[in-house]
Length: 546
Image 1 (cartoon, rainbow, N blue to C red):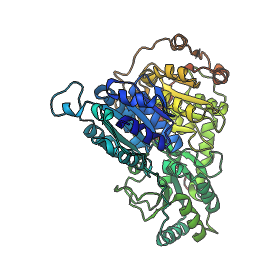
Image 2 (cartoon, rainbow, N blue to C red):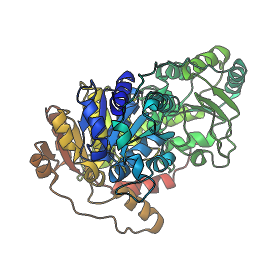
Image 3 (cartoon, helix red, strand yellow):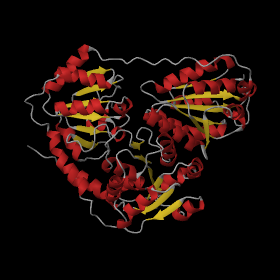
Image 4 (spheres, rainbow, N blue to C red):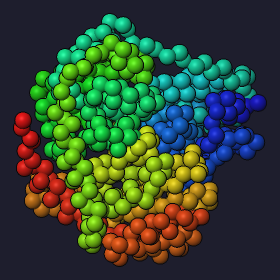
């Protein structure tokens, strides 16, 4: 047995089902070992796409997605998706090929120090130098990647080491016991919550990773607490729940901003500062904060908790419930915001303008997709509108990258989502800019028989950057580009393409696209004049007063 074969055995032991990657000269021995493995190697069209697939796979399953590249340019292509997984808290193991160890001390073709290169964008980066250390390195890699807060790790495998004889066997996996919060912190949290007149819950992706949706919904319901979620916390409480105030994080004032203005206690549950900076909602640092998470709070001058409850989130919420009495408390002020939030959303139900306003497009999208279906958002102006207007009844049914926020994630992510949930309908929502970054993976989707819909918000430019330029300077520059005929492009790849030419066509087209057995592409012109109109409206927003 050689090192590559032991490596594959260890990956099988970790429960790996797929490896997303590209073949290369320096990973030939790993590919050879995979030929007789239970692991399916998914041949991708670009290493960035492979890493994004592993990223979304890890986020949806909680098990590390695995991606593979060769050395040099293959590894550098992999890095964006690896960094995205690391900052978004998605477990991922990246494996790279490398030159032989006898070439590392001199200038060598395609050689980069990949361990050093990946160190800043991973939680752990190591090279297999001794074949017999393979099992320990793989076990540690998965343990680090999957332990809260999860993220990316990197294993580098030199070409000659992969071919060397190896001794060893996969190591036993130990499930970590839950860690529970101290009684002292629970008592302090219950006391702080009992005193608050206008509490507001802010829930993040950590609550989804902890599978705490049921406990959080019960906690909020019984204590009558309004709940706002970050972009990555959608679905922790159903959007139809009377306490749900939907998403916060637009970096501009919105209805929910008034709730933060008036709150006297923010209960941050599974909230990661990277999802939405506390300087946006607590700029002076004077809002009292109750931090409930599996991890201690990060240090930030705008996020200094009054109490930290560190442990299993569901258990912490249940224990605080036992200790907290909020009887005779009036409705928190933030609950008065919900009617205005809903009215703003519903006003676009009958809108027939064309090009379609983003609010209308997302309203119709929500009404076609079932609660269990999954929307993967790329990064761009459409992401901001999806965050604000696409609401979820279940966790992990709208995936938004908001840690690293890398363009190009939607199409590869949709492939991973379809592999994880083959019976659910999947939509990849992307701008025309993001679409062109990884559209080559639509061939991968066709080859894998993973049909999903790619919905292009087409504005002929980098709409989010134009939005920012107009806000700052009153004019835009360097953001326009040309596009191919997206329908013909889809058809040339063996897919089915659609073009929306009026607002009323969108829902029938979407329903037809979702019924296809091949990947589909919908080209939809979008009216991004709404971006500045929203900015103007939010800038003049005044909060209610009692």
